[in-house]
Image (tube, rainbow, N blue to C red):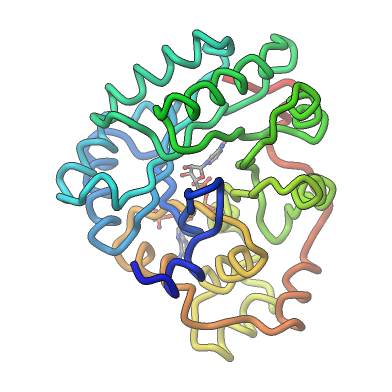
Length: 279
Ligand code: NDP
């Protein structure tokens, strides 16, 4: 990848680590569907794959990666671990099991999937992740579904959180959450970035620029994410939609078009409350 391309299609996650802004989401694909979809995505140009222990598809994702023939070093691979592993040694065990299932020997990004504040060990989990960066097992670490209060607890322990993967779409902009990320230099990765084919794709704020720019509504929304500097991990198993979702770097939205999509914000919280939900 040339320097110029890398600058517009990736963002800095850590010193010497850049993350591709568009990655392939793999939930709820499992088995052969997951392997075939990942292979197809890599052939379509995806260089960032998002999976998790909880999706029960890491072995199939690993099979898809191998089938594609891509060099491991050309791929950015993210996975996440469940809260049962929230201790320093537990995170190391989770890492060992994840790389074995995936058939690789390192991870580009490893995320604590949920904070589970009632268990109260997510700070230890983050310390365990930092240990894995320091010994070279993973290139970068991060969290997912951490609210500002959870992030503050980690920050108070002296750790700088590199990335938080949270639910963001035009109707779920989570303004206070994203303001915290901006203030503390935390990269935002948007999950369910298309709102699971959400009804906002039909709104004029999305349809009008799609018509004007000759793009699809999904491309407009993904462009809105990346133009805000966010990573997004749309899931598609469909060949055409995979290509479409990755092809968002050859056009731009103007300020008015960005603002109109921002104005779709409803103030609704994410669908799952991470103070109580976890796995
Ligand atoms: P998405 O917003 O990515 O939507 C996926 C749905 O939209 C699928 O039904 C897909 O169907 C459809 N779709 C994809 N592209 C298009 C398009 N161009 N036009 C129209 N429809 C389209 O939702 P997800 O919830 O799947 O989120 C994406 C990923 O985020 C997950 O796969 C997972 O990796 C991650 N995630 C992380 C969570 C966390 O707790 N950290 C929680 C939930 C998800 P089709 O396949 O037929 O194209």
